[in-house]
Length: 288
Ligand code: UTP
Image (cartoon, rainbow, N blue to C red):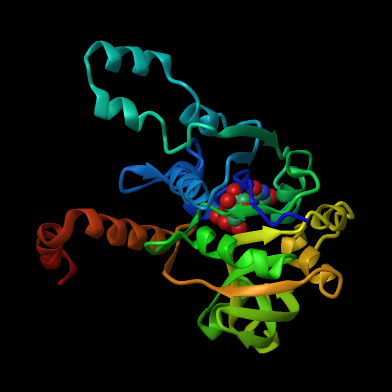
């Protein structure tokens, strides 16, 4: 089977309750880090990794994604008439010229595993990537590009992992790790949201996955797991022994933009890259 990853799935049908009231009318993934919404950072990361098919699993109430990535004739024509070429380029919203955009719906937020299953017609019989836009990774080489470079050697299911504080394991899918070879960690088992005393390690999955097509059959059993939701971690755990399963220790700093502090931290970190020393100087008194 070819290990080239053309399709990326963005599950963006969640409710974003931790960010209310900001997420009442604006989806969490449309909140901006510096001057781009989270979803655009994610799309650019996928494009840099070579993906050309972009699948948005959204809810029927959320039209913002297609508006953001679709044509905006009024804007386009006005900017053209005024000769604003730099601004016109920004209207492309980070999509490569050959991009195929697919929108599919998750009618009820039944869990991440269910959201991924909703993309099954678009992913077909090939391995595909999943990016959760609310996890951002800052590095010169995008996290997904780091993973696709590894995937030819591993195949199967590959997940980005990092160590989290021991008292945070209940927020993640956690690995029962086996042998480590370079950046790769063999996965012997997986537990979704374990209490610290039950966690097999502190090595947790963050929002980047490359999944084997077999995952869709497993998900179609609609088994509920932690929190009564259909969990992708449980489906991957079921496939251990059938398809290769590895963790990947990525390079870079992760920001959890699904909560306020992580989101603010990401905004600062990404602003400082562009704003440089001058911005740092202006921020210092605030921080002190
Ligand atoms: P989260 O676990 O952060 O859930 O989802 P959430 O609903 O977005 O936010 P909170 O916890 O209520 O604040 C991680 C990713 O999975 C998607 C979300 O949109 C987000 O990108 N997701 C989650 C779905 O698409 N469908 C679901 O049923 C659950």
